[in-house]
Amino acid sequence: MKKKLLFLLFGMSAFSGYSQKVVWEKTIGGEHSEYLFDMVPTLDYGFLLAGSSLSDKSGLKSQKSQGNLDYFLWKMDKSGEEEWQLSFGGEGQDILKSIYPTTDMGYILGGYSNSGKSDTKSSENKGKNDIWIVKINARGDQEWQQSYGGDGDDRLVQIKQVKGGGYLIAGTTNSGQNDQKSEDKFGGLDYWIIKTDKQGKVEWEKTFGGIYNDEPRTIVETENGYIIGGVSNSPASGSKQKDSYGGYDLWILDLDVKGNLLNEYVLGSENDDQLNEILIAENKQGYTITGNTYSENGTGNLTIKSEKGSDFFVIKTDNRFKPVDQYSFDLEGSEFLTSTAVMPNKNILLSGYKTDAKTNKKSYVSIQVDDKGEQVWEKELSTSGDDLLRKTVITRDGGLVFAGNSTGKNAKYKTSTQGRDDYWVVKLGPKDDVKQPEIKIEAFPNPTEGFTQIVINHEYKEGVVNVFDLNGRLLHTEQLKHDMVAVNLAGYATGTYVINIKTDVVNTSVKVIKK
Image 1: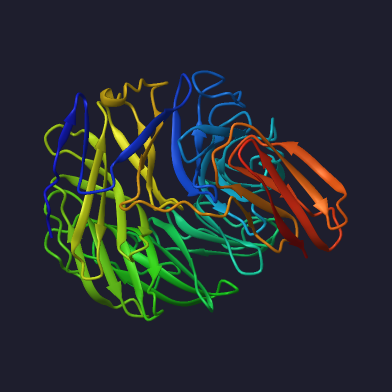
Image 2: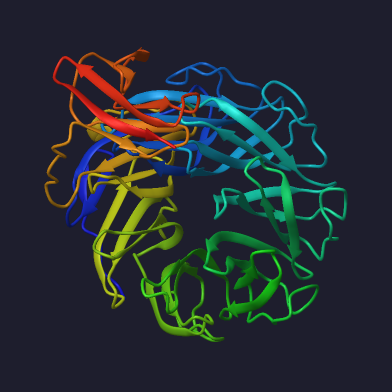
């Protein structure tokens, strides 16, 4: 299925699409390089960027460098303005790959590090790289950190909080058996799946792989366990029982809650097929798999075909991952899918970057696909340099935020580069005008055991937040700085509290129950 992109040229910048216009764009970075890998939307219509930075204090970066590359977080409000930034790391390279919001309104940060015990890293390095996770609370304060690794190279790909409040980690490993890893390696790279408790203590860990390279890409929690989706170029060998079709195939594992293998599935063709995401069908009667393919002939058990280099694909399957419908999408270049999201209208948003066949220039690209596999919307965003999109999120106002890396300028908005590689963030407004909430403030969660996020749904110049008990006693007060403030009720007795927001615009309150 093919639809040609429409181009509107603005100097050295190109934007194209059918709806949802560019509202603003930002270039973020220091004097050297920043590499973005993940992003999550926040309750205040903003979002949090996650990646790694090579820069010291310079440009727009106010955090000092810990060593080589550090974990780097940047919180933006709905207008793209900075609210705060954080940095974590040791003397070596620390690569932040994944961020996930936790039920206590904080975040779990996951990546890998070759730093020893130094600066803000509290554990020694065991091999080339170790998996390193950091838990921060709603205010960005570090609560704890843990590392996992062996004598080889261990790299986190994704981390998610799961039922019970613990965490599931999917990563690659070529480490042998050791005190943290109960099984030996099978080949080049293996899946390493780690389940931890709320404090990051390992409850179980499993290694899966064949004689070559096996790399997980995504975690899906099911009613009875977990689905781990990834890619493999191993034949049937090691713990892999299914043979390959050619090149890299999709290798999907069905695990129970203890990590025991219930089943495995291989989907592939004669060339490389890359998996991005697995979505559970709305009726829970199957799955939707997204990715990109180099297949030209549609052999194996996948019939999708690429027209030029690599193309996006969507595969619908039954509950045992047998393909039911398959669609591929050529955007007049070679496309690499890096982000999948579901729109409010249930369309699937496929986003990544495209390499132009003639110039080899890379640009952000995104399409929407409906339930019948029809492409109904597309957008391309580019600067004068190379632009690698990493993540697209849907914000609470119905807009879209595209974030990744860029080496170029955007002449239309007169954005200059900060360093060699920068974060480049573009906000598209909602397709239709969204009515702003009439409620001036909101509290999430409510009830709470600890933090509650107070979202201020109005523009203001200055303000203060006050916390009262039901007797009217003032328990806490602080100045407002942003559109969201984290209030910690953990130290108070069970009961109901009044959180008052007083700005130059309104004076209003919300009752929050402390469990």
